[in-house]
Amino acid sequence: MSSVIVGILIATLVVGLTGIIIAVLLSIAGEKFKVEVDEREVAVREALPGNNCGGCGFPGCDGLAAAIVKGEASVSGCPVGGEAVAKAIAQIMGTEVDEGVRMRAVVQCAGTCEKAGEHYEYIGPKSCRLAQNNPGGGAKACTFGCTGYGDCKAACPFGAIEIIDGIAVVNPEACKACGKCVAACPKHLITLIPYDSTQVVMCSSKEKGVQVKKVCQAGCIGCGLCARNCPEGAIEVTDNLARIDYEKCTSCGTCKSKCPVKIIS
Image 1 (cartoon, rainbow, N blue to C red):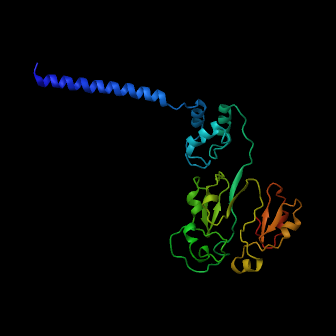
Image 2: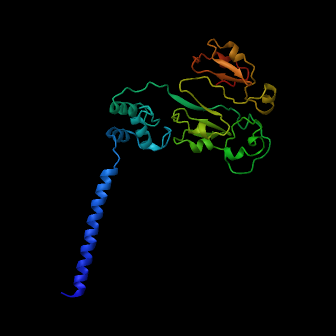
Image 3: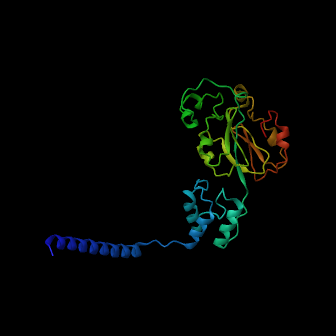
């Protein structure tokens, strides 16, 4: 047998033995450092829709599944899956579905292009957040008004927001109340309210009534008629703005009928 063949055989044996040794070491390390996975977490993950939208507030469906099993999130924490998914997860976890109140996002501004004027013509990136660096927080005369450049629309994973006539408008049927639009709005105009509520103060201005009327035809003037006439005491006027306490509100409509500027919708 030539020395070349012997060399090849030796090299083959060395490589083979090295591979076997590495495989054994990896197997030992895998057993020693393996992370035990709760079977419930796997089952919950399979029950989730798999959108990985982050609307639940966790890093995707894997993050939500882990949080549910750890007790850090509700079984109804998935805004996409709805009641059907919540029931399936509750069965896996051996618990009951939380009877939470369905919520929806609303943009508290009615200052459309027609009703709210502009200080100047804005030329720059169409970003609400970037526009805040300009005088008045953007071109709109009301410094509290919706800029209308769609940061909230871009943030919504469900396509529930459109920019209509210069302001953001939420489709309540498509909204999952994930809160991403709330976080995206630099003027803090978006809030979550009970889905069935029919009364919303569509203004966020804290200016006095006289100043509001100068810049917008659809602003709250802080007159307090809604608060004084609410039979449930569910409205207070603070910082010149009417605010509804939805835990007290019964959606009777009295405030809407009494509002002289028709800003409660």
